[in-house]
Image (cartoon, rainbow, N blue to C red):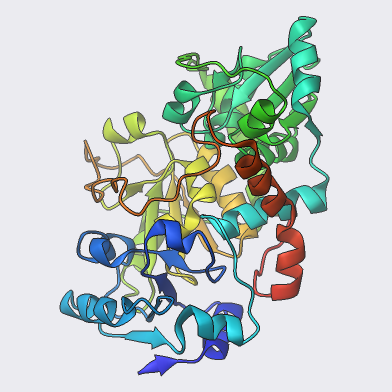
Length: 410
């Protein structure tokens, strides 16, 4: 059995539950795929499928680009007990021939959303030479790196400190207690710096806030040297800091239409077996390991917004977020809601018993079939990095042509 591309598009527009799975390797996926497709190579189905697709009767549609992988994938899913698995009619070529846009790179719709946020909200940014000039003149600035800590430690802006995305509303006021201090948020490219900067603006921080335009890629293209091995972070906060951040973040979540539930409400929706439910603890991994709610998986908030297709490949699913302080869950939820997800925040999440250690996530993928991102290291050709930036700049136009995104921006 196969499903026509038009039926898939209709399901996406209606926000029906559907997992559109590209079963090629990541490097091939990155050359062109449907916007809301999640990538899961055939060789990893046995290890990842039950983790990423928690409901066995969810509607799954798989495709390849003529390599003969999709039929094998159907059989593997069925062997694991998934009962509604179909082929995309014509594969990726059928999608393209139906007149639907193909998107390049990975995490495309999260990146597309970031571009839309900048386009709609005119998120302020500074170019790398402007930031270098501020550093050289010892201006009153603080540079906050919104990526994972390991990414920051690998290569970062000199004098920058690590503050992963969902931590920004809590920790940026600690890093820059003087309202006159300019805050500059960076990532490797564009998305996390745009979302991080706009998070601080949405939350009402009084400081001037800017994204570092094009992140470490832009820094390298400007001929400026990156630091390696930095270990600086903004680790400490007081109860008053947490309470202020909670008030700010809750107001943002309210404006985005995020709903809240308590433990009883969570129990109720967990009993709704006809819906896919993802429960994520959005704190950093070390905090998660030190005590988390039973049944919750770790997805640090900034990464969840950046890699939503990896953490939640079932479009139309319901998402519940938990956080012991509140601000991280509220800010993360505000973005997921604007990306079209039904997302709820669990109140008083840590009042009950906790579990400890890992959430049992699948082992990380190795290098086989991996797409090498232009910003991984500083030895990449300038043409590759520039092409990456050109692609991100063009996403809004692509979305306008495709018309399936369902995003809104507050």
